[in-house]
Length: 272
Image (tube, rainbow, N blue to C red; front, side, top):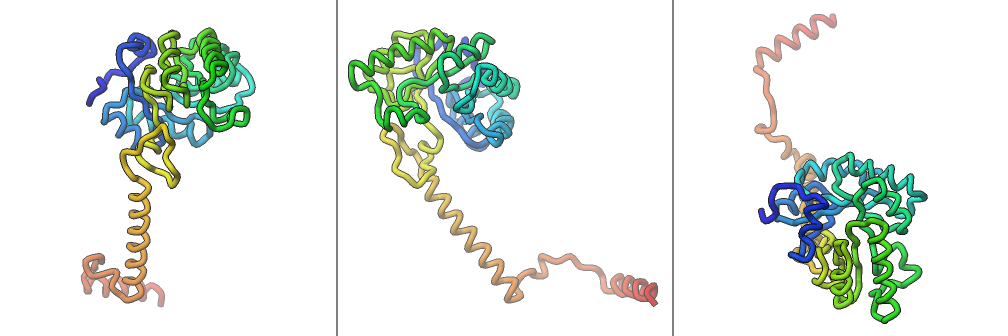
């Protein structure tokens, strides 16, 4: 176990800024959470943006009770009041902080209540209609805008920000010029954490892996193999039933013949 089994606080993470790069995985199941914890990952994140995701959080925390979990709140929260309510629900369930890609105004409403919040700069998938799906910050104007976006989140009280698909030189500069932790997703190794989704690490989907990610296993192929094994096993069972090969004697429970005859006599005697 590389990470000590003592749950990080936001204060702990802030003290680590500039000292070493932390590892960070977004997990989607208790099995993944337990595996990430056992492997020694520093931070975990998970979804908290649907009833199913909210119901799953207690099981993730149970699987990795000393892990630092940051929960992704729903996109499009209508007000600071709604954001505060959802964030406190996550914290009361056991989350350590919340992620929010909403405006600095929404984030400030949460941080004013003492809620630890992770913001988002760079490429924001939910805002892709404004930018296209591409790296952000490759021109001087966009790079400067990113600096001001970062400062807006910092001034709103966010303790960290995910920085997605930003040129690595710029991301390194930004990380050195903010009190926030910058969590790199495709933005190089000059930030405070290195962030990947479990699906990418495990190779758990049938698409081209993003340029910024790396697959360490091929879980999709393994799942397809297991599905083939399921189909084969079910088919063999059906064939055994049809051909009289299942159940076998070893699968049966027996009653002694005299006891069966006695029971039948009692049953049939009572029916006459």
